[in-house]
Image (tube, rainbow, N blue to C red; front, side, top):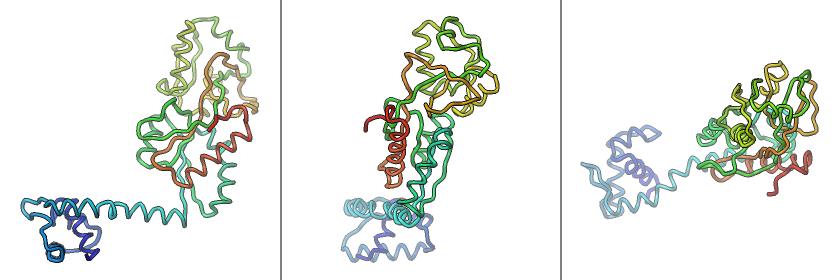
Length: 298
């Protein structure tokens, strides 16, 4: 069978007729030419593949379409993989602190294996937004605080469990979180991510279990902004201690004893490409080097 004839048949069967196929075929070809090629294919096979009007695939046409469809619909993916080998490209999303302070060392190591690699970074907003980026293919992998279960249609691996902390201004009167809990109803603004994120939701649930109310909530879009506004004296921040060894002059950290740590991990969609696998393993190795006691077992 002529492969070009099979390609035209694929478009005809997929789009429900010759005239509809002509509008979708990605190169110029006239309707009479397609009709003639289809007649030649049917003559070669000695059977009818579809009724012209109204359009309907015959039993033989359905069988042939089922055979050629995976091949032609997979060509774009194969071309993308071949281009990836020559000029690999990786789109990474994640928390700003992770992308800014920790990922550069990982990418430097990856360039030794993928010297022609190109990559782009996209800082996360709300978690639902990051999940949408992954499903739509806008990012290939995201390094964020992850839920206990992978969101629908995505894959998840845990990388490290990091302490949840409060941040206060250096001149704050509070020396420990227990001093805040003693108030029961806390008046100071709580600067944090959206209440819809797992971090904030679980924190507020734990306060509720302890009989503590904190209703004055100021939502921001990144952990970095939490620190910035606390340093500006705008409230008390709920944050993740991404680098437990780091010390800041801008804010003081109050440990949250009895609160569950935050699990940082990677999210991706579909079968991970070699680049996605490499960057996940690179981040895991980096975390083992920096904070061996906090890394999750594979």
